Length: 479
Image (cartoon, rainbow, N blue to C red; front, side, top):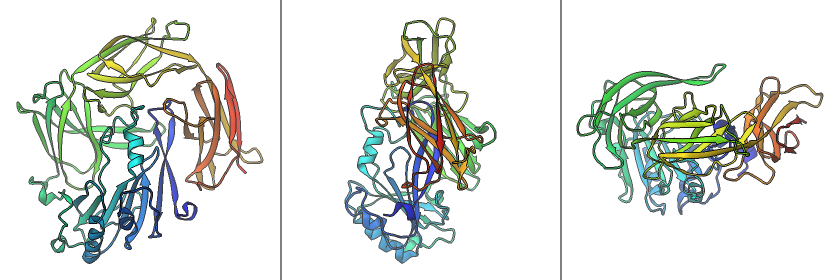
């Protein structure tokens, strides 16, 4: 595959939980048309489905390694029946067929789609979600789970090309019908959200759980943030059940709170049409971690911010309150004069912690602490900084190149690994950016526009050395 000619590279700013809390680039590759793709390491038979003749495009994600490919198709009933036969011939432990109400427009390529094929490279899934050396991705429902089966999503109605009444489903497929007509509830007034809540420690139903629905919208102003507006609420009964009807379309966030339990986010999504959402949820009791933050000489550090970087409940799976990377972070605290901190409302189970203070870096982001815990000691060491200035060959500051924003990436000279410091961000309007609280060591500085050609070097790579307490100045010149 010619990724230079056929693929557009899109980079989104996200946060690497296993590295330092810097914005980092997540790579998504996409391509339009039906130029054949090679086997990326998929189950037997998946390549024939990926290259089925009516394909209109594809894209690959997620960030941090890729491995999940989405192939998009348009066609009529006969074309879908042929595609269904190809899909059913894939050799995998399971095959999923999901039926949706149409019409559907893919969010990446912005194209109308009649059916879509999604398949994972199993090795990529396991590296991302099942590596026992890291808890990165703990907040994902995929964490510590078997690989998702190859999946075919078909969209019926809304002038779609597939007449479902004429389709016969092969016996070896697992079918899930998510159309409104199959939900068994009245969706004429909007979406319906149901929840069943159980105590994770006892398995008993939990009454008095507040099921909350907020309307959310992203505000990209000078201080980008999510806006939240409560639109609905219900409280679970003695059987642990709650239900909300007539939820309006648009972006929503579904969370739960209950006295004595850690809060939990269930979903954040966009409702393009009325849906029936059902959640079966285990809630963890709330607990506290107490400790101190010191420097390498054992002296307490006042004003250090401590937060959880990963939260896992008793079952060893992620437990997300949904507020981790947007203020206020409910599971964070600032140390007092004695360097002491207290994190409350955490789920009983396990947590990784992260501490920051100006001029310091955190030495141990991988330790997993029990929750609850007392007398935890977190140590910070002196750090340096990297100041990057991007210019053209005449010395004029650059924040964009060939019409695209410019990114600067920093990674350890020997390559990134779990627990190492690194990340990337777009430069400011004046062509500069300051990476602060950088651990001492050698780093590679790489810059490119977003999107960019993956095989083109826009500016020479550089290797710099960061020392404690010093600022390292780097000039990046675009050729």
